Length: 209
Image (cartoon, rainbow, N blue to C red; front, side):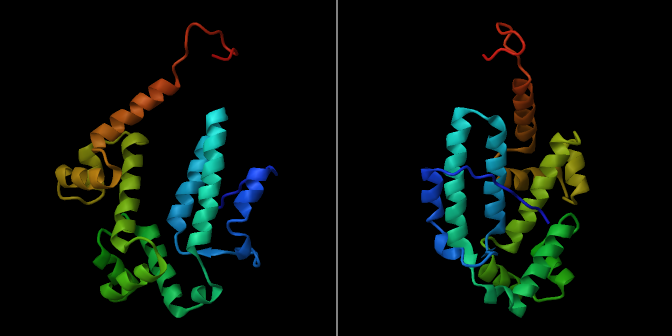
């Protein structure tokens, strides 16, 4: 289980933001049917928090407002989470999250969970904001991105490891999810890394540019 923490400094802007979902805070625990969306916003807050610039402070302020709006918009009643259907949905989701490398299709996920594929899709329509296909593909492509930039694997090797019949099929799927081809993704990451290590020779170490 992943946990995210945010330190909040009191202020007028924060107080105004809290009114967005104040009515939801009667309980200590809030449930959401859009965990992936909330997770992405938390990760963006973490990313911009590391920059510690004036621009990043403003961005994080807006992201925090977005986070609260998302929580308000996607929160669900406790009773929903106590239903057998929700329990089945969570079981299916965990199966996908834990075995997305072997599970290459929605049918495979349904078979693994021992339920009908149409029922699996209905569960996701009721309790999630994405289809099981989108979840499976997103997890697999995120993993592929890590193999490309972290492990330095070739496109052909990644396609083989993830069970695609050809690098072309994998590249097409990757581009559909990531909006860029695997090669462009890798090249863009390398350029970003090189830029982050660039030091302006006009400034001495310790000086602010």
